[in-house]
Image 1 (tube, rainbow, N blue to C red):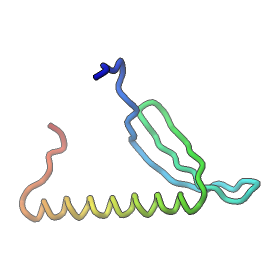
Image 2 (cartoon, rainbow, N blue to C red):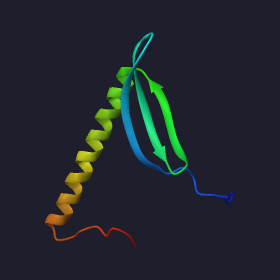
Image 3 (tube, rainbow, N blue to C red):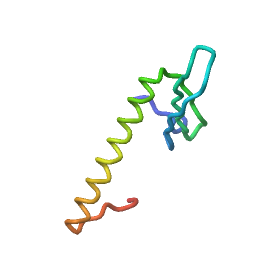
Image 4 (cartoon, rainbow, N blue to C red):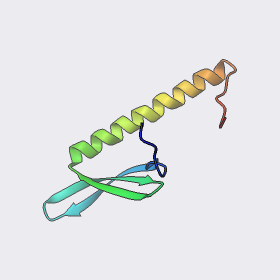
Length: 79
């Protein structure tokens, strides 16, 4: 395996927004990383799909944390 000289891009925040363009409305996926922000233009269908998936993921994650805490186990914040 090749040794890395610096840490890889680590996503710290993901947002989906819309902007009005000459051709209509576009979706913009913005990913904030440890190295800066990456903006990607998307069609609205794709932007909506990303929002739906991220919402479902967040809800699933919250339910799993709640299930563990109901059992008396809470995930450590760091090791």
